[in-house]
Image 1 (cartoon, rainbow, N blue to C red):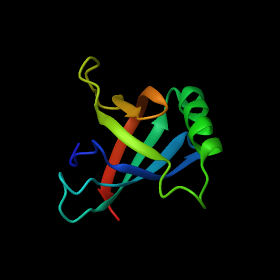
Image 2: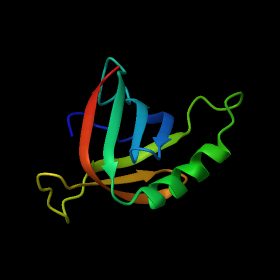
Image 3: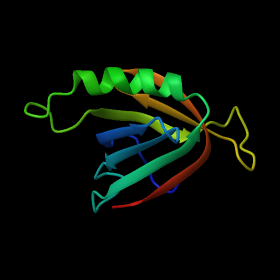
Image 4: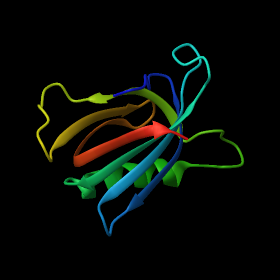
Length: 114
């Protein structure tokens, strides 16, 4: 991963069942990224889409845009070192502060600033 997501804020999450993809938008933590950049992380061809969809359904159902400035704080987001990546298979480990852990198994991860 190109960025340090620890303590960053998950601002948006959107899922697309038709192509089994998800896009997460983070505001990075100022200690690790002085510019407080916004970063988009796209997971393409998610193999365990049902699990990812269920996880984010809970996150999104709890969201209160009028009261909260983000969906949750990121405790960890990194490539899963227990599962080596191959040409069309990547594993990413995500842990949000209030929702626990999720392992995302996908074809590709695209990361970049907004």
